[in-house]
View 1 (cartoon, rainbow over the protein chains, first blue to last red):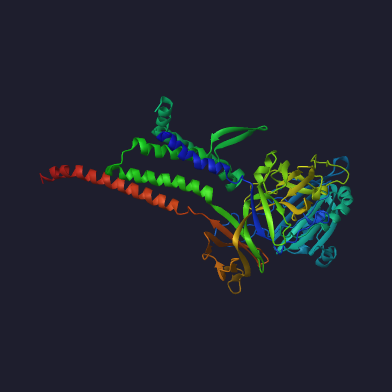
View 2: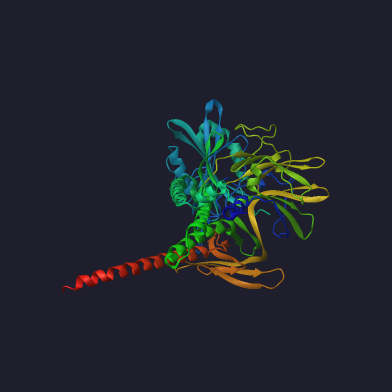
Length: 217
Length: 395
């Protein structure tokens, strides 16, 4: 082999290795994990098994080494949406978005967001949603009374329902406020009054599927 | 040497190739910097710098448009080495140039080795929890685990990117083939209509068994945000010699693995974040988040960890805090983050055996430039001295 061929081989060999890395099927043996009970597919419920889309990567992926920072939203809640809700691409502020269409092309949307802290507290949040559909704010005691409390999957869920107008059209919000690990999650189902009222049962069932994630064995 | 090889050698040796490659390199960096707005830092690195060719999509066709970082860097490396072998002479007067070029070669090699060898994982531990593996920030893997043994699990891992192909995947430890039927790099999971395989959005569920009978995956656009990760899903059929074991929906969104039985053995299948197992285990004893008295201003974060090897050679407590990482078995564990409950710590686990090379490369280049400058300076002063003497004579 000539020197220049040597040179080519020398230069290209590691590049070829680089091109093939991370493509191999591998195997290994590990001790069983004690804290990872497997669940049989035949007995596991769908609502016990799903995580949110585009889950935060742990918050530290872009963090500088040696710089301790709190994760963007902590661990994500998990849920399973009803089959007829159409998942939409997430946006910068959203943990999830679902579109629901009704008769005559009516369209409602479920927006799922999460923010650190209590975001002003339940009363402020309820009145913020009321303001979005042209309703006057409620006094503290009345706003608190308007929240129905559920305990699902170790989460304390505050459910509210309100009907007002938006753009002159009758509009309804069914929403849930879920405190979780120092953050507050908002599930706001907003749309035409009739459609959101019709979807209330599905929304309440959906709330039962919300749960904290568990570790993957 | 025949004419073809000679012309090839002349091409690799030529300084014109160096100039062309440097210009291409600058254009690559410029384009990558602009595209970082759309793709984020990790995707840009993969697309522009850790690739041989950059593709763009015209409709459904991927069209190559520019050489990638591996191609440009590799050719530059060959060009530099070839120039030294064939064109440059090793003389004392050229020592500076040689040193500078040696530094540049080392820099290119260092980047290549970093790309090949660097590990960057994270280890998330809640107080009292023990783990012997770290998890990737971005990569996922399909695992098929033989759980029959009471003490150990036999794990076969298939990289996520292999699921994108339709080719059957086989491994000697698996008595069946894994046939990817569909793959979504990002998806959402939804309840599957009970009476149909199709849903209103048009997505089709291919699953015939397991959790996929109740849940389906709907494809979503890939997210490039640094604080998010995609939720890949795939439908894979397990095909044994005698029969199909069914098509499973696997997804990183499915928290629990799915179990089945075949050939008298218990199996588990899951798509999960890629793991790197270690021959030792870490237990988080205590995470501490100190604040300045009377304020919420962070003062210190620390994780008290118990490090233990199975053979008992190491069993000790270590304290990891800012600027005081744990260095063990070639890995460095940094205090990187924590959960808001302040009971869960996140450690960044890094291995980069070639981390010194860029420093050595820069030192060599600096030394080379100084040497070269000194040679020129001495030569210049030597030439100037007689002229100065002439000028001073009349005075």
